Length: 116
Image 1: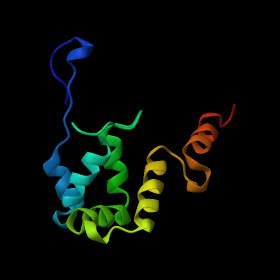
Image 2: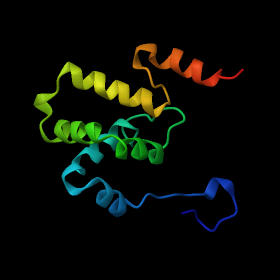
Image 3: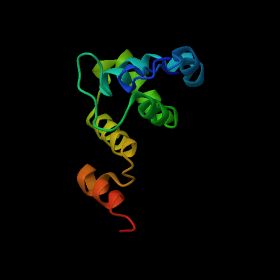
């Protein structure tokens, strides 16, 4: 959705959170709170080049991440090192890096220079 203004600076958008909650399923909605904070909110900076819609799309595609984010929100004391690795791999995947061992810089470089 965008506003009716013709000025580019006046364009606004919104995400239908009720629809997203239905798609995710109510048990996993608590993970959306963490996704919002992690992907950039009023108090945390956002990741360069990735908007909320992209994060939510990646989130919806990953049952393991929905379960992990829900668990972290509901039971933060259960956070383990393997969970940090999983969130890092999820972040790399959002940037299009399919092999986490490459890291963000190498993975993004290879993706950007593919076919050059």
